[in-house]
Picture (cartoon, rainbow, N blue to C red):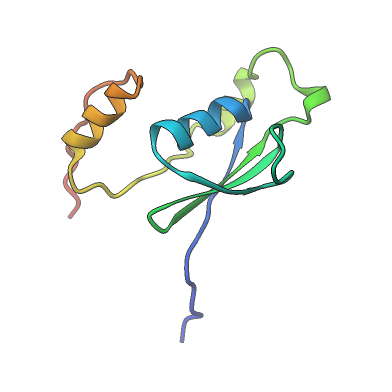
Length: 113
């Protein structure tokens, strides 16, 4: 018999926490549930939630050790990291994201067997 699991929250390392929070909160609509420094403007870890989906963000570097730009080798090591979101209306989601400033290719349909 399998254990009962009530959910899962991926932990992603981010280079720039304010930029990441801005994307997940202001563009996608996630709520910031709690951070490593509640009520603080600067923090290194955050728990976000949207429609029952939870996601944690953690800074890749301590503030005093953060380089001026992301390390290409470190990014390449995470090239296989993907997040898949279930979305009933991909075209509406794409239009919403474009209106929010996201500039990406239009969605491609992949049928799941």
